[in-house]
Image (tube, rainbow, N blue to C red; front, side, top):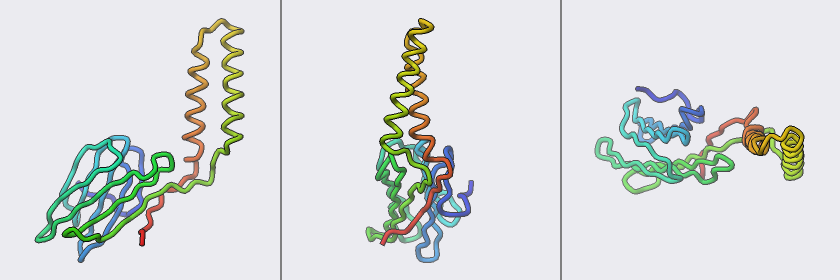
Amino acid sequence: MTPPDTSGVFSYFGGSWFTFSDQGRQIVVGGSSLTGRERIFVDGALVSEHRNFRRRNAHDFTVGEHRYRVTFDLASGQHGEIRCTLERDGVLAGVLLGNWYSRHQLSTWQVAALAVVLTAAAAWVSETYDASYWPLGAAVVVMAVAYYGYPLLGAKFVVEPLP
């Protein structure tokens, strides 16, 4: 099992990946909020793996005479901001911030207009065809997909070091 080649790689099942360089070692850290799988590689060798669905989690491992701690912190679930911190022997060695940058955003008035139109259409279908309330449920699903999916069109996951 080997890590991906670059930092800043993202996939829905594979998750987010961060790459640190520390004293000649390449430390590749990855985690997926969808599967909960978190893995840490040092120079291509797997040194730690956990399943986690919390917003914050830490991995402790030893390489040579050094003790490392890697911390994942989902700073903002709505914006996809993930902070990954590397400590060596209790001293901060690096912090990387992964974030989504999107060209598309729905404004407040667009969300409100979408909600009104979908609710009105669902209510009309329910009354016209005596269709119970399933159209309202369908409208909620369409609203959620539009609200969370539309900003991801053309979005890019970027990893930047924090000072």
